[in-house]
Length: 193
Image 1 (cartoon, rainbow, N blue to C red):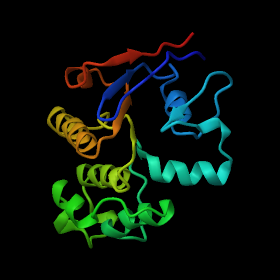
Image 2: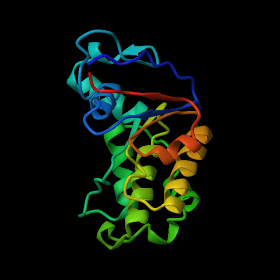
Image 3: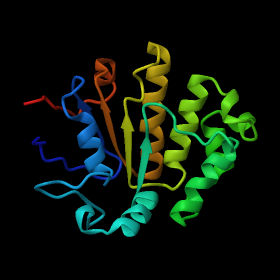
């Protein structure tokens, strides 16, 4: 699979559109350092991700890349605040003030709540908060709006863009959801060969 060259500055956003099976998830996994490219390079903050060993890559990813998965992968044994604290723990980086971040995402009242009691929208915002907790240089969002109604989809996109701008991170949203095009003008489409 061949992908176009992508170059983003801090604070810029890119939408990657494509149908199921077009390679969107493969691209996301390459950008996150979860897969190594067969050709080409993935450079972030001057580092070629393919040259890092497993431990270096895990630490680099924890510090520099925030990932918002399609389905929030929250740790059920931990409350909302503890899920965010885990991001700090694994990256060995202080990052953002968790209480302030939860307040900005309208989750302050849920800080000590079990993640099992959250609505779908709240769980998605906690997932976004966890991705932002370490002030990453790159935020990758995988289908963040696919299961949301129009209003909540718009809210999530605005939230991602606002928070990325606030921390000076590049934002890449990978989706098949055409509604997102009205919020991010810079986009590429991937098509299966």
